[in-house]
Amino acid sequence: MGRTRAFGNIKYRPSKANPKRIVASFTTPEQAFEQWPALPERQSKSFPANAKDDAITWLSSQRKLIDAGVWKPTAVVKHDEKAARLTLGEYFPEWLEHRTFKGRPLKAGTRYRLRKDGENHILPYFGNTRLIDITQHDIDAWLATLPSDQEAMRANSLKVLKAVLRTASQPGEHGQSPLIPQYPCTRSLPRPRRRNETIPATPEQVKAIHDAMPRRYAMAVYLAVFGDGLRIGEVCALQRRDIELAACTMHIRRGRVTADSTKLVDTPKTESSIRDERIPSQLVPLIRSFLDNDVGQGDDAWLFPAKTDASRPVHPNTLRGDYENARMKAGRPDLRFHDLRHTGLTWLAEDGATVRELMDAAGHSDVETAMRYQHSVSERRVVLAERLGVRLLPDDTVEIVGERIRQLDARIAELEGLRGVERAKLERLKAVRG
Image (cartoon, helix red, strand yellow):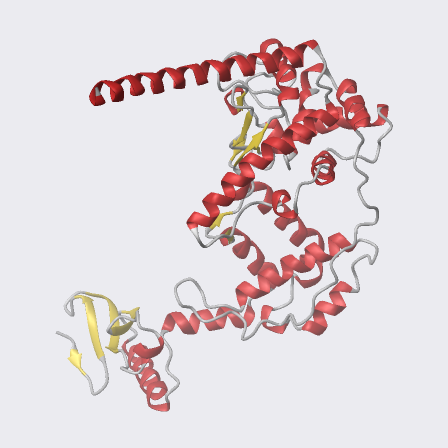
């Protein structure tokens, strides 16, 4: 047994006859549980077996702190000591490692961009600065060192710095005190202005770009226009299973990964990016021919495989390189692949799509309202998709007229089946009445 003291205990471990260490402990102050509810009932600290005087001194110091009303748990003291000397350069890797988006780990590409913004623009200036020392004045001085003509870079870098400091100003995941007493950022930069507005392509220009692409990847241009916002990574990750010609539907379920060597594809960037897109009937014959002649037969076959390995989806940079050559030949060197999205949405707007129809249908609190709205949007999107198809692809070709006839035949067969069911039901009702 250890000797009982006026304040705390000192015990030898594993035993007094064979001591390896000394453990000094005392009962956790009752008032401490109000601020730190998860504290153990006793606080303890180990000392070498020959350091009894140090153990007594420690107990005495802890009692004085309690009597003065300033006692803190050892873990909190260490946390505060760390916060007092922690630099932004030391904190940034830890922040990035634990950074999440809506509770989910960051995509590899997002993590890569955050790291590059930090390494290239933030850490060279603030790397050796303690977190607690950073003020709005320091942030203004840092911004003054960044090129004034690179508005997007300045805005993105400031956004990252503000995210780091905001996290540092909040309690830790397990209730630890904030690393800095308050969030220091009080001003923001104006939103970057686009130097040049995107000029949407004409149908003739889109066709010219399509025709100038390598045959293997030409369909990517049309799919990007009709995909209502398809990113290049989503185009690269399309598989045969994602195309349902009978339903005129394209399923967007994944995106090509470029910043993570452990996988080729991942879920799209956001939850709302998982969606189904309407394929105009005018495009169906071209896609059917493309699937028959250029795509592998398995459901998991990539629509656009890598040039040297069909088991891998094409890299966005490869597709982008072919596209850049094609846009030059088509006389639109300014039109980025991403601008095909802008082109498609502009055409939809010109054909009468409302703002709501151009936005993602989301945010309804009433389920029934959302379902009714989803139904109306579904019907409307069929009309809009058909109008989009008419713009780019005329409906008087042999292939397109033949495709419409096949669709009408399928619909007639479906209606014939329904009529047969209703006739049988009618006969049963007549028999019962008879």
